Image (cartoon, helix red, strand yellow):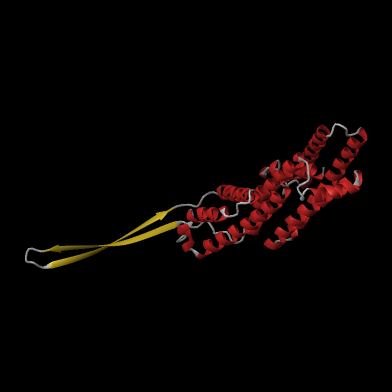
Length: 288
């Protein structure tokens, strides 16, 4: 049953947490954290209702235990996020910020597991964790776990990569190979004068096309779709499709590879995104 609570956590952290709410934390940390935690508590309360509907034999005592668990998980979530926000102001390095994000997510996961272990049967919770990856879980748990995988592959990985790649992203200036495409061709024209002399005229035509890169949101959506397709390909045991996906993505940026900074940024971003997608795809395939 832990997977239902974890799904509620991911929905609250990535789907139902708007950019505006994240920005408001800079001005009023406590108030925005209370709003954020309240959303989490509501989502976990809904998870409890789903568990009750899926298990008609569940007792009122178990439901009370779930209520206490939701309250304690919400408190721990507030404490973890408050500590993360305080630490993030003191840490400036990209690697440190990325590591802080991972630690934050691991602590949230562990808090859910440990609280549920305390308020419910410990043995069944531990067994359920391993059963989830042996293909013996219920269909509802498998579907919920798959939803968790896709949330992590899209929003979770996107947020993590945004932190990791922020210092190597190309700037918005017009640069050769990134935002300006140049083309040059030479034409040779030969003509004969009335006295029989031959004249050769060489004309060089140079064209330049200026353009601005796609908005950041477009790149994020492309990355989310890319990792979603990678997870699906791994789930249906068709890893050969990864080559087609890589070729398709490369084709759209071919001319920009002439610029070293963009090529390095693209390579690091694509490899990182693909590694996350493949890893989560392997996990998803083991669930089913």
